[in-house]
Image (cartoon, rainbow, N blue to C red; front, side, top):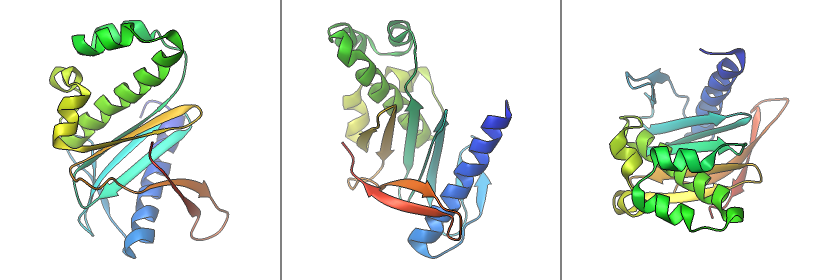
Length: 184
């Protein structure tokens, strides 16, 4: 792993995933990495997705294929990234936005692209990056959560969106408290 911080995120994310599965199903789970790097929950058999960015960690699991991505908001050259990674139709849409809306648009669309890549398990490819929101939503349910300094996107192969919870660390067993949240 690249750094101590990334190692900590890796460990915390897998702990949150196993605790979340236990709290929702009453079953402990084994997590095995697939060749693609995606985690796979062995028992009960569930699809899962993990993402981390700075101090935000997101984990998701479902009986259906799922992909999620969280991105911490930070200073970036958004125009350069949009020109490099987005579909021409999206570039046009971005260029017409008022400056105050560009960051929100960028993070929603970037996390959508990353979520779509995780959903398929093939990673970020030019084909995934070129997909517009409309192409993604034909095959899956897409939801966003906009925090004060991060954006979370979740894509699932089901018409029913995943439940969204914020997690608070506790000092005793069960070690985490889940707080139900709403998608935007």
